[in-house]
Length: 79
Ligand SMILES: [Zn+2]
Image (tube, rainbow, N blue to C red; front, side, top):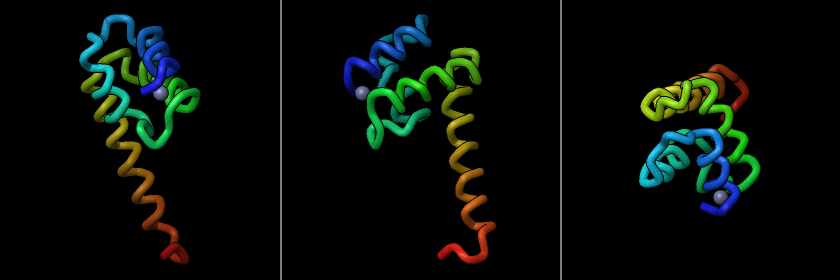
């Protein structure tokens, strides 16, 4: 993770211990496929949606993934 990701977590998750930054980034954002501004935006969004609760943020991210997969399945023309 780059300095931009670290700064975003520090800003939006001021109470999160530094050894859990990776868990948040891996579990609740597109990191490591995205890094930098996109990840920083997701970090901010997840802080807001979860109230800075790491467990809740991970659960919300899981739900987002499930919803995205189901939406894909629901498109009949999609292979
Ligand atoms: Zn980064």
